[in-house]
Amino acid sequence: MGIRLGTEIIDSDLEWTKERDAPYRYHVKLLHKPTGMEIEQASESAFSEAKTYCLRELHWRLRNWDEYKQSMVRSLEV
Image (cartoon, rainbow, N blue to C red; front, side):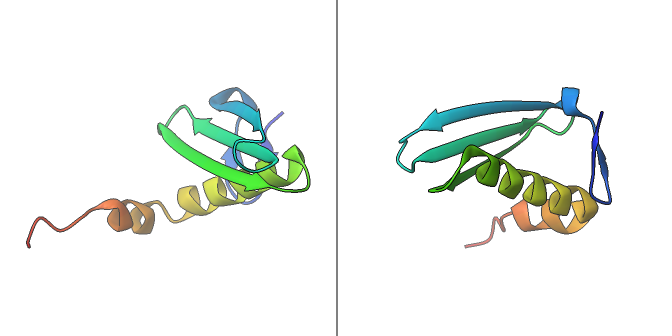
């Protein structure tokens, strides 16, 4: 079953890594396999809170893909 917040995300497309006390109490890394995007978030309260932050960021990036990609491009001019 996918998570739905405006953009369909399939659970099997997600890879989660959890760490405790690294350096925050609950640290989560999300890999979105189709795009190769990695998102890291932390929480002092719970893993579920950090996972929610990751999913919100992923949804924003997918809904605003062009804007997100443009923000990742650095100018080569000095």
